[in-house]
Image (cartoon, rainbow, N blue to C red; front, side, top):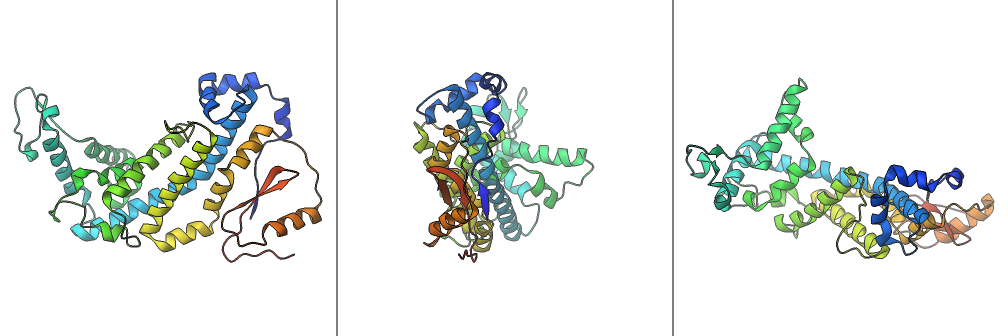
Length: 330
């Protein structure tokens, strides 16, 4: 598979940068000053475009993680509790645990009978945010004329709903009421080193990354990021965590995703070479097919572990990504 490293058209040269800034907004563009040294308006716009390209490469990875996680958790919990709507009693018990753990914050305004705090005049019944996520999903399905069946709930609920199940409130010695550690080995069959806390830490970071994608923000934004190298390193770490979780859930799912080329594509786009390519702008280089073939074959002489960004006269031009089993012959 050979993809263009960038999609910057020659017509970009004729576009007014001030007009671009007007509709992206100056404050948003200024946030990219962290990752570029020469902080010109043109470079800020280029860094913004690179961020969009990296975002598009990350989305399929987050999508794979989200779908794999919710299905693995739902399947394991359904078997463990012997019911497909296991989330109802689990959320209730988790809500009780949360109320008891933080009752000092709530008892002046709220009560929760199931947690042992009786109804009192002037107080409202307390419901956890996690329980409200389920109620909103059920209401949305009903409003759309659909039955809020367990399968429909799994599809309707957001990533945050599933991440929240890794909170302390759902960890307890009683296997009849809690998820963890009772289903850990069933959810993460292929990595015994993964536990609730380690996965939760990774998921919270990935949830933040997903939210930045959804809100069109700089996806590398983090207090630890001081320059372009930090930004790229952070994103690679996040994606490595996502792939660790996916592989822990299913080796086949992991291998199929790697074979799709999406992971290698991300690695090729989320690189300093590609960022510099955006910052340099579009320079026309003429190259004949025979020379391109020679450069490609030369680059692929060694076993390909990561994607190859093929440079022409020092300018990164092509991302070469071979799926497992593919070969290239002169």
